[in-house]
Amino acid sequence: MQDSFVHKGKRKILVDYLRNRIGISDENVLSAMNEVPRHLFIESIFEDFAYEDRAFPILAHQTISHPSTVAEQSELLQVKPGEKILEIGTGCGYQTAVLLAMKAHVYTVERQKDLFDFSKKKLREMHLFPKFQSFGDGFAGLPTFAPFDKIIVTCGASILPTELLKQLKVGGKMVIPLGPTDEQVLFRFTKVSPTEFEKEEFGAYKFVPMLGSTNQ
Image 1 (spheres, rainbow, N blue to C red):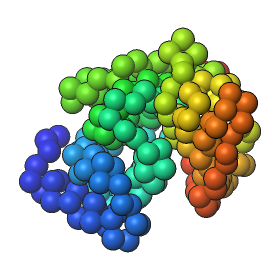
Image 2: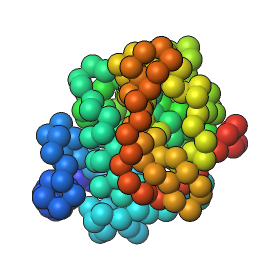
Image 3: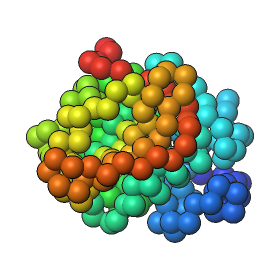
Image 4: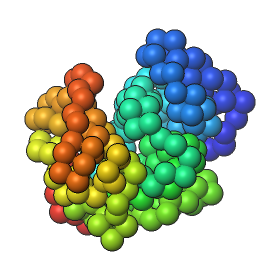
């Protein structure tokens, strides 16, 4: 699949929708969403619908999130160029690509081997290079590379992964969906001291569940 003028035109329409209907105002996010070809991360049968605000099935019974969810999570993260970001749940690599387009240094973890292999190959094909891409347990994070400026969790956790909070810098932020399998609430935690966090709530969402260990 190529990135044609038609795809670019559809991306522009998507970005206008994200700005005017969803209320995304971070130009860094909108620019990244305009830059990253979402259709390259999904199966070709869905290509015509890639720039609609829809989720699609990907490998390992997972989904690629709605573009509006990717944009909202990215905006809540308040990414600045050069920041060190831990992503839990690489998935197909689309959110990773958006963070890279925002000039972040991305460290990403995926527990499904099929998705780890797919995203690694796909990002390399697109000349996009995270600082570190790991096949492992998202609940454990990447303590070797900690602390991080920001952490983004792209799957719903039934309990708060405290290990991840430990890996945040003071002043850092983590965006995470929390709650039972059928529906989560999106939260942003800001680390105000080594042991204190501010918590903000941003409404109900539906994410695939965050699972422990790894799946070969």
